Amino acid sequence: MLADAGHTVFEADTLRKADVLIREMRPDLVVLDVNLPDGNGLEYCRQLKADGELRTVMVLQMSASMVSDDDQVRGLEAGADTYLTDPISPGVFVATVGALLRLSRAERALKDLLEREQQARNDAESANRLKDDFLATLSHELRTPLNAIVGWTTLMRTIEMDDEARRHAIDIIERNAKSQAALIEDLLDVSRITQGQLQLSWLAVNVPAIVAAAIDTIRPSADAKGIALETHITADLGATVQGDPVRLQQVIWNLLSNAVKFTPSGGAVTAAVAVDDRFIEVSVSDNGRGISPQFITLIFDRFRTADGGTTRAEGGLGLGLSIARQLVEMHGGTLTVTSEGENLGSTFRVRLPRQRADVSGRRAIAREAPRPSKETLS
Image 1: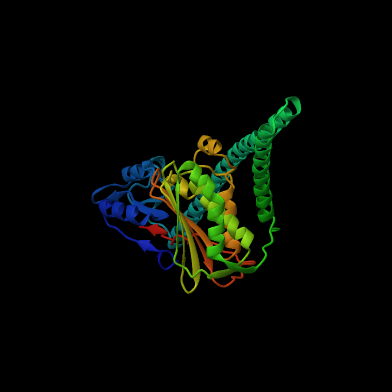
Image 2: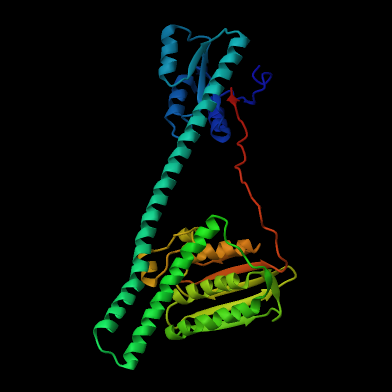
C-alpha cells in the first residue's frame, strides 16, 4: 500500500528485526503494531523516543485489539506521534503517513535551520574575537617601531651625539620606519586583494633567479641566528613562468622569512626549485617549530596565529601567508603546507604553471550531496 503510494518501505515481523533495521536505515517514520511476537510496541516506542539518536523518528502506532480511548492515550503518552486503530481505510492510512512525513521533513528543516543559525552565530563570535585580537596586535605592531622612532628622534634632539652614535640612531630609525612601512603595505595588499584591485604585471619570470634573490635578502637574518640556509635547484636556470616578478619574489621571501623566524638557532632552512613539463615547484622546508594538526587547516586564513603571544613576540600581523596564497592563486598556482606536527618542521610548496593561466572569473561551488530518502519502516 505505502510502496504503491511512492514510499520506500522496509518490513520486519519482530521487534528485534525492526530494531536492527531502524538503527541501520534510520527511517523517517516507523509504523509500529502494539502487539508483536517478541514484545510490546508501546514499550518499544517509549525506548525509541528516549534514544538520543533515534528520538526524531516518527512513530505511527497501530492496533486492532487496543482500540479504546484509554488505549490511544497510553500509546500517545508512550511517545507515538499518532495512534490509529484497525480496521482503517487505506486512504486514511496513506494520508496519515504522508502527513507525518511532511511533519518530519519540516522538523528536520527547522533543526537544520537552527544549526545553521547557531553556526553562523559561532562564526560571527569567532570573527569578532579575531577582529579584537587583530586590532590589539595591530596596535602593538605599529606602536613598537613608532616608539623607537620617536625615542631616538628625541634623543638626537636633546643630547649631543658623536658621528658614530648618530649613525647608529639613524640606522635604528630607518629600520623601524621600514618595518612599519612593511606592516602598512601588508594591510594595503589585503585591502586591494579583497576589493579585487590588486594588479599584476605579466612578464616572463626566471624562477631560480627570484629564489636566489630572496635567499640573498634573507641570508643576513639566517646568519645572525646561526641557521644553515641551503638551496637545491634541479630546474634549468632559465626556467620561467608568466607572472609578476615583484609579487612572486614577495611570496618566496615571505616563506623564507617565516622559516627563519620560526626555526631555532642551529637549525636549517632549505629552498628547492624543481620543474616538470607543466609546473615549476618552489619548496621551502625547515626543521623548526612545525605546525599542529589543529592549526594547519587555518594557517592561510587572514589574522590567524597559532599562538597569539608567540606570534606577537616574533612580530607580524598574521597576514603574510594569506597574502602569499592569494598571490600564488592569482598566478594560477597553488600554495600548500605539510608538517608532521609541533617541533617537527614544515614544508611549504608553491606550484606555478609554466604557461600563464587565465584565472579571471573562475568560481567553484561545493554542495553537500542530498541524503537518500528512507521514508517508512513498517
